[in-house]
Length: 537
Image (cartoon, rainbow, N blue to C red):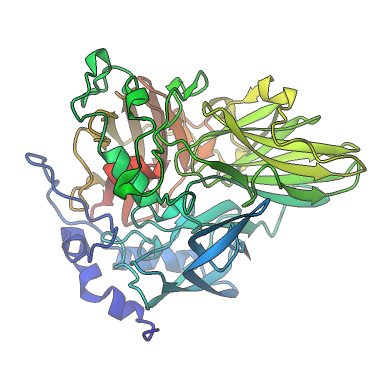
């Protein structure tokens, strides 16, 4: 391993010039989000706050410096045991799936060193945290990639309690085993509960019959072309048509690079998601790294009050979650508290998190995560008494009951955004489709040199107009927003935008830097559905 580069060596003068795009220009590839400038696309002129600039340092100093929690992490090739005799070759943090959780307390300083033993450059993004910009982990924008054999020291104050997670922001690496929970405890925790269960959902393809996420991306990027007659199903930049009508002709052909079968879905439909449910047919769906034939088991006593922290770490799958024989009381979404709301099930898009409370019954109960629209599910088990483990195909009645809808959640008064007229409105049109696999904002693929400007101190309204026939879970880095464009909306950092619908959110521009907005479908993002909000210097 090479000597660890210091922050000065890694960022140095390049970060100081990042406001003019110099860092993006010197990106070293290897899956970085460097992007290509679209012909005719306008670039916003002006000077922007750099990821390591004075404004960022001042914001970090204002957060304070609490006790330091030191962690060492290694990303490496390994074999993972998915249960039931199924093992796969993949990339992971250590030799377990998910990676070992990192747990800190709000106000702590996290000092985590990531050693890269992978054959490609990598990075590490802290999903949902309002952290300092030069630690956000986006190669070509806020840092250089961590090359093979190198390591990087992430160090930042952790300001807010909640359920978070971390993963690479390099190519489609997130759809391997490179993810883990980040739990930030509240030093003044208001909830009362007996036990805690961290539940990580995932869709799995890597290492199965020769498949890799890169091969899946290559197959998807071929689009629905190749001389097929799309007819009314052709997808344009305006998102007309359903875009998946001809997948049957594609099904059964070999996957990209000749490795593994085709992984393109056929007929994945969901009413909850407004139609098309996803692009990828995964061979496995997992809870805490286990297949449903050999599920993870959580033990408790009857009557225990259990806090479940549920994270969707999937690449292309929304999960509808229910616990047989129980109702779910939602207490938090994306780390921030809400007025307690009870329902039978939850729908989580990729990147979303929900905390729920349940009072455990007596027996053995299935926690089922239905792969929405994909005719498959993941499973874990809550055991408080005697009884057989439920069959892998079990479908609790609660899955068809009343779901808790994010748009109807109200924030806890302690985190409500507060009434204020927006100072700036930024409208983004979600475009693209399966025909050319050209997912983008406003018809332009991602370019790190293009920024949508904001000013520190502004209340910013974002309006996402989905002109496509696909749902998209949109994620904003470095901030949380209020759903619905008003103070009454729940605070989130990732939210679903349904096809041919609009979503309005608002946030306060209180964390300077260059921050990504992107679809958290890892394949849509890598195809180009990413953009940057830049604070003016």
